[in-house]
Length: 295
Image (cartoon, rainbow, N blue to C red):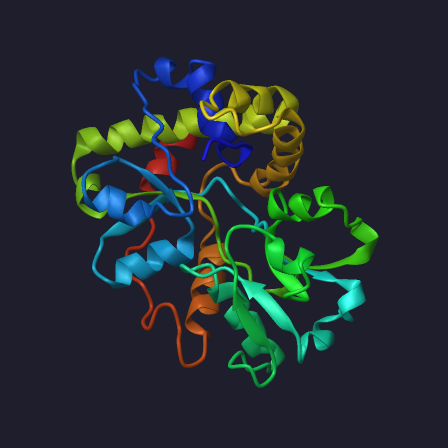
């Protein structure tokens, strides 16, 4: 989906940062119904963007996905609740219906519930499988829904609810955040020196794009809009999104922080009877590319 969540790459292309590195980069469409792991496994891409929970799950299932760079330092995921549904603190979640995204996005939520001691089988909280929209909170089917700081939260605001009518729980603040958009390649390809060199150049140019977008959020949003062939995106939404995305990329030069990685793994393995990964991953990330690209 062409949106400011991916601004760094559109900026790098538009500003000639990829050209400067001798790269011809094609940005292929993704979206909630496109699994990056399947695309790269089928040879459809050299590098994919994925959230770490789904990348590590794919890795445990046998696909050698390796994180080579982590432009997003912070998680944008949160549970947004209506105050008039009686939710102002985590303790109030008991007895409520909560909208949750699946396809690997449920794991931070499940680890938070297990931390709160709330069962998710309907005895303590009822989990509503949520689509990528916020209808359940607007139509009264759920007290809370999953939202990203940069996207669905604003859909609720645009639908007429005001921030002071809402309680938000950022997963980052609850200590269960997992790493989001990172760059992943197949480990076997990293053994090829020419491929690795190409990735060094790709990461360097992409991070240059991200830092430019952070420093020039409105201009970056306009570059994203120029690339939106669907015409579905609006200037207001993209500028707002870019402002929020800049908060998530701030503090990362692209190098994965091993402590953030460990927190993600711990969160994924603490999912009670149904953890997303059952054993500690090995070789799931490397600093080899960022060390060369950024130093």
